[in-house]
Image (tube, rainbow, N blue to C red; front, side):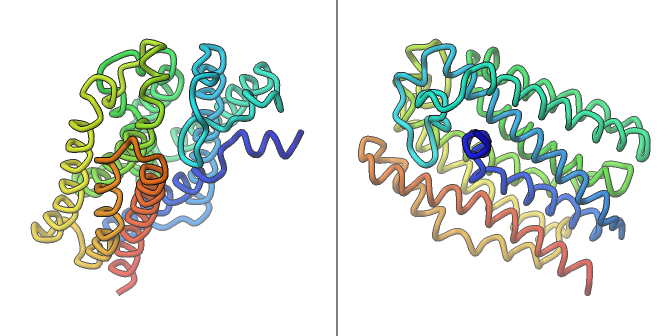
Length: 296
């Protein structure tokens, strides 16, 4: 059962939380000269626990609603497939989602006590994104913002706060690409599930806008993300080393191209693969850029 529980976490996506913690920590070192390795590791562990909670709760609600029976599992969409295969019971997956969220809670409380109460509103919003995403947010127009906020911008700002005990405008600007990237991660992964999601009353952008318009929106958001990174450097907000993140542009072009052919199963899976690469490596290179600027 341990293997099934591990696979239920969707470990291929948990690297995102590690990279988010890395990015927020490197930003804190660059902007404030703050670096506490123990805080970085603890914040990263808390993010991974929260991410596991998101994944497992999403799987549980998808299974209970019947969506799992209508979707085809791909390496990047359709859930883990664990419940549909009968490898775990729904109650076990629900318990896993609740327990991991509860385990993350003391970590958040610790940082509130150590670094300040201003972290509390951020944690509350992040927790609401976790708990309400599948049962509530997905049934409202443009639910992708929740992933961009709860698993993108807020984790970066949260790990920054864990190091510095404060927020800053440069840190917010530096976290915006994470919002766009994680937003786009979910957005493209929704393409294969659009028909199944629609039958269950969900209102993802591929459903409400149609896949062609959504592909255009995905393209615009991707271009905006790269322009934002370059613009922050030009404006002197971010160090020039963060331009390393632009190295992922060729893979973004491949993902964009594939998004316009969603009915080509092999093509859309390849596009999602390139998109995952862009999401992870772009943020990692941003972190490396802040790190190199901090140590110079």
